[in-house]
Image (cartoon, rainbow over all chains, first blue to last red):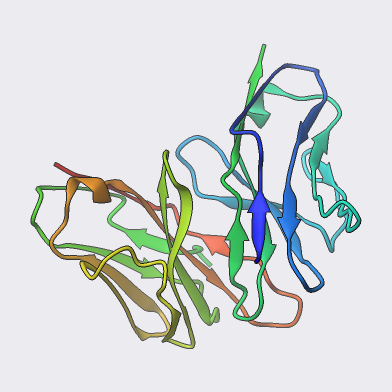
Length: 109
Length: 115
């Protein structure tokens, strides 16, 4: 079964601390993974896609096929990073995405 | 492009009333998705279309929910009759089937409150 698991509902850190939002997936084919971010009362927007291997707003994510993980990391959290983060897996045709339950990141001053 | 457009942004209605949510996808995109977001259940895919044809509506919770896409630039999600448990934020997203383009672009959402 195709599934995305984000084990933490809430991650609370202080400004300047490292952040790691966990994402594990289950997929039989070659996965294509994304991180979406939703700031308070705003639309979801794409943060990262694994095929781009880029760093956006200081965030990076590496696909680990052995551990079936795609964790999102940032070395020094900022207050403006506080948001809801969703990990998503592209599933089959039509660009359908399977989303995880989301992790709320709260960065405290 | 203005991105995905949804209307209304907020809707408050009484139980039993019909509610129609509207979505205009990004021009040129040929896949359209409707999602529901709640605190309890997170982000749920309700239905998606490709080239205006419904592909999978298995996420539609009940027969009270229906969706249409009469043309490439417009889709509706209708709830009739509405119930308080339908209160949620409903998102529309669109995507292009072009090579390597798997990203979905989301609209601002419609916040529905059924009293």
